[in-house]
Length: 166
Image 1 (cartoon, one colour):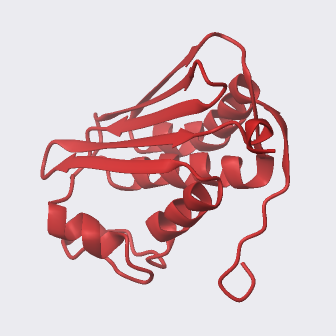
Image 2: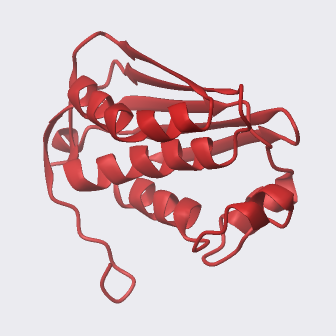
């Protein structure tokens, strides 16, 4: 980011390959934490014209948050779905500690952290969700977080195909 601006460099990205790559990077952490990690990509192969680096960062941040805040025996699912307009819907669901609406608002604030036993045990910079929101915003996408305390969290991101933005 430079002076509050984030530049994007769109290119054609193989979504299934990038999701698989991110899962490979996070799988060992999930395994060590005793978590089940599953993915679904529909169709099996599709591409999206987005900034590859930022798209990968979005996926890794979502997955690492899910691993960080899900207790042993829980599960994490990532779904990547091609949309009819050429865009993509990403859905990451976990059975983690969850957040209240107030905690979501706090977590979306730069350097804001949710208070609680799990967050004290897993300190971070407080930039994860704000960065994800910035990446989604610069791609003119949408971000929705549905969460319930002690049940889990579902993060849904819709990214338009940047090729259609020209």
